[in-house]
Structure formats: structure tokens, C-alpha cells
Amino acid sequence: MCDPSGYLFNHLLRDELEQYRPRYPKYWTEIRPLVLHIVALTQKRRHTQVQMHIRFARDFILWAWKEASCELTLEDIFTEPNVRVYLTQAPSAGAHSAEMSRTASLSKMVLAVTGKRPTLRPREQLGPSPYSAKELAEV
Image (cartoon, rainbow, N blue to C red):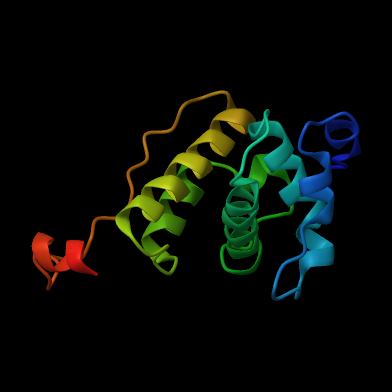
């Protein structure tokens, strides 16, 4: 497994990365080094949503390890085919904008590992909203 310490030592987000604690810590000890490593590789500046990227990486790595039987290495996990399958099987990230953020974040991670920009698309929404634009604006 990779040791992220070299990436974290002088990283602008070191405190945010080191202090992150998941709500559900099962398997965190095993996947933590890989999660922090990939987020440190892809998030180079102060960012208010670093925890969101950590969650995206954590959820994807855990899926790849437990569901897709990948080894806990960047090269084995962060492939375009793995992310493509994950995006179709994983629970929805919520709103379409959250799906787009998750897809963009994972795409950036695949690019950092493979050197190739993946052609991934966010999951399509499942039909029209039951509410009109006016009703949504009033909420």
C-alpha cells in the first residue's frame, strides 16, 4: 500500500487531510493511507470542499476493494473501467450537481494515476422531477 506521508508533509491541505474522521470508521484504518494519498495528489490548493473529495475517494476505494476485489493500490483501483462500473452501481450522490461533482472528482483521480483523461459521464437522473421549476424555487 502507498505511504502518503511524502505528499502530506508540506501539503497545503495537510491539516484537513490528517484530521478527517469518517462517520462510519469500518475499514478506515485499512484504506486511510490510500484515500489521503489520492486526495493529496489531486487537491493542490486550499479548498473548502476537501472533505467531499475525501468522501468520494473513500466510498470508491471501499467499493473497489470490497465489491470489485481490487488490491489496495492506486493502479489497481483508479482505472476508467472501475469508475465507470462504480458510477452505475453506487448509490446516488443526491442532486445532479452532486453526481457531477463525484464524477469530476473521480475523473481527476483516474487522470492523476493513469495520465489519461477518462471520458466519464455523471449518472443520468431517473426522469423528470415531480415538481415544477416554480415549486422548486418556492422551497
